[in-house]
Image (cartoon, rainbow, N blue to C red; front, side, top):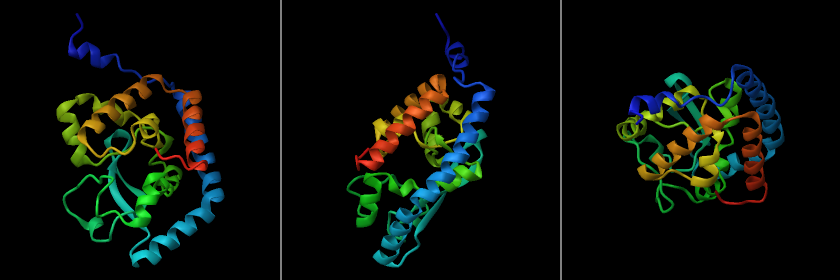
Length: 211
């Protein structure tokens, strides 16, 4: 019978060092192309956010990434200016009154995540990988499943299998499901799997599918 320690040590990366290097090169290339191609759409989104309440266009927040290091994630603001200044983190739900009308539309199609392409170019994130989380919630997840530490071995991503099929993680239960999906990705990840995830994500964005 396997012990818990034995089980934990069997979680290994599906990518070797060469594949990880190629993955990073693809990230930089496609993030740059995507920013050029999507810049008109991002400009329109910025105008809509600004005209709505006069508040800031972007939202910056500390998240934990590769190696457990903190970085500032960049998103289009989807909540009221007051909500972004709250000291204690609160998970946003579909009926959250703090989310603006424009913010609801952006969240439905994950368009608020587009500025994270800049995070990709800066090396904080990858196009595909586990979604980065705040330390406040990581501590709670770790109390329930210490395998979260394996997530630190990957750059967080703009999209993932969990993003496509688990949606926004607005409950701790969803966070734990997302963790299992991210660990499964870590075991199986490859350049081909990344390509399939990016292709599906692009399809959803182009055809306006909510996910």
